[in-house]
Length: 358
Image (cartoon, rainbow, N blue to C red):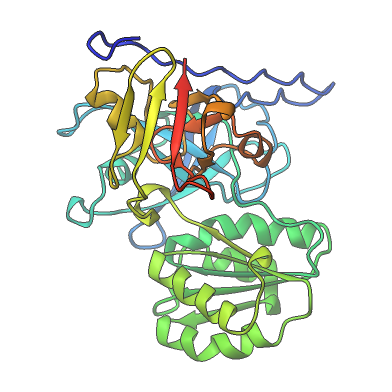
């Protein structure tokens, strides 16, 4: 490969599982669905909830609590390229008739790329393309209790956690932080959880509530939190100060906003040159700057388009920072999501390096 002649780096597509008799066919990791908007709910100011169904009304494949779908946003309104945003699924998990998502309207000044405005412009009957559901935030089945703490639109992945725990008779407690008693899915979680749900009015109320909440949990409780980055930092810091082990702390963040710039590393394209990847520059960007054509879509670690093969024997390890790969794929160490993930340093030498190939 030569950096002077753009070359397409392509990722292998995982095989699609065979459907169980009488059930909807499972979706392959890269498969897309053309779904139709069948319901719109704007009852919470600034939040739009959509129900997306098959055009024929058939059942959709089941999904793991905590899953998200990646919604493709076409070019338009000043955007020259497609976008892809990940939105948590909030509805029924078992052979649902629709996938439901809730999207907070964000202004461009807040750093949004335009996807939320497009979603807020959709109407019943419009077609939306999504990927298969993926989960980087599943419940731990062996937990003694599931403690769910969410703020703002971060409540969305916790709705399915709550529903699943109640369905299977597991001990669960949910704390939702919102202002003025108006929060996304607030009525729904109250109806589902009853006295298992606590609603707090703002961050100050949470700060006063956290020590008692986190200090009075049975051994084996797992904590799941989602919301703004500083909110999650505060929740996890309080838990760590009380001695919670890292293995019982779980968080869901959305794309690049929560990622640090990362340490520099080098990358070799098999048969080609070795390139520098500075801090603050993604592997995807470094390859593009050298003329390589890497398939991509979201640039946020959620869609799976920029998956590249890694040669483990020639690499020092992958620092996975995506929301796409499952635990088995991460443990194998033979692939990387070029848009967000980086190289791990060798403990002996401090050298951080990847070798990638088509």
